[in-house]
Amino acid sequence: MTLNSAASLAPSASPGSVFVFGPFQLSGKERLLQRNGEPLAISSRGLEILIALVERPGEVISHKELIDRAWPNVVVEDTNLRVHIANLRKVLRDTKTGPRYIMSVPGRGYCFVAKVDLTYTSGSLGWQSSLSAQTTDTHPTDALIFAEGQVQLGFQLLRNALATLQARRSDLAASEILGSGGRTD
Image 1: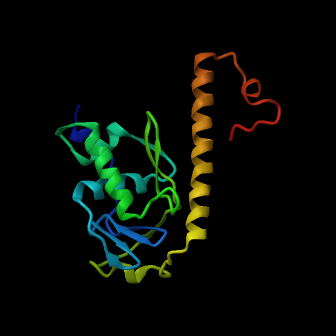
Image 2: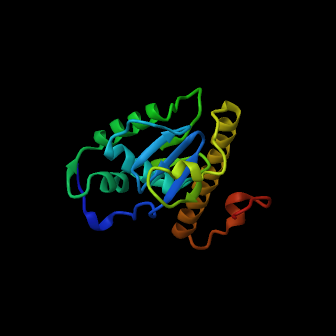
Image 3: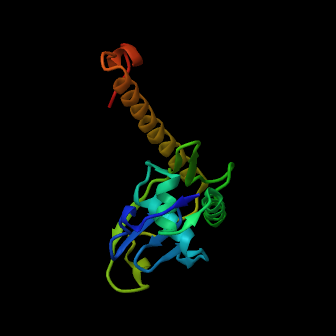
């Protein structure tokens, strides 16, 4: 169990910002998730978790940070987070054989692996009209987005592991770890 503090929360989406990924549009201001323009039912805590993940695509967000974001100043079990992540995956139709948006990183947290576009609008509930084009649900595109997200996550995890190794042994050069053809960028 964790006691959460509101002081550690990350900022919410900017007013008027809309996150677009696959066939989904997410408005932090309107607190609304849509699929191809149709509103989807999602709990307020699930929505807060999704916003936290979508705000930082490709980055592993710790269990603690997500719990602090969705349950400020409340003691909750880690299972609460797992239940909400499972529900988000159902809403996003995120399966092992279909499109992937949320990836579990064992022992670390969760990562949003799809490409995210950010648009800004004014007004209320008419925000979907400001999108440049209606997204469509195409599985090849979703698979490509997932693969790109996995590659970006893999590079991030490798950079983190390299930094950890170098911090533990400062005299260890990157070339000794990665070999002569390895890249560190």
